[in-house]
Length: 113
Image 1 (cartoon, helix red, strand yellow):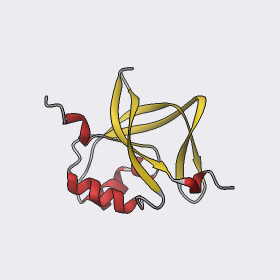
Image 2 (spheres, rainbow, N blue to C red):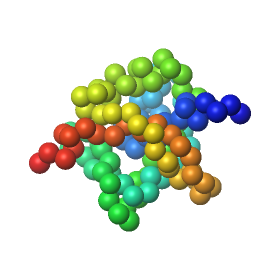
Image 3 (cartoon, one colour):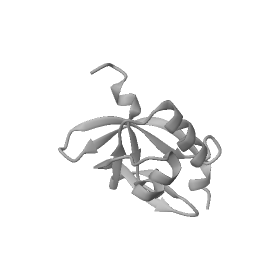
């Protein structure tokens, strides 16, 4: 295991939870492992988003083995940096352990009423 192994992981909580959507975008199946994001609540306006909220928990999944090219495709799909930013975050894996992953966090549109 190298120090960069964790950089190929992405926590998803919206449309990318759908295996068919991932395969359509990336041209191959990408396995997903159930995970949770503590301290964030999931919402939806035109798009899904998460927002910090004490005591909240967002169900989602971890995608592993993503390449630089995969992230380029996903960044474009998620409209980075207009609609989302890609940041590092700690999520809770199915076994209860903490795993550091990338996540797409909303820009100011999610906060605007």
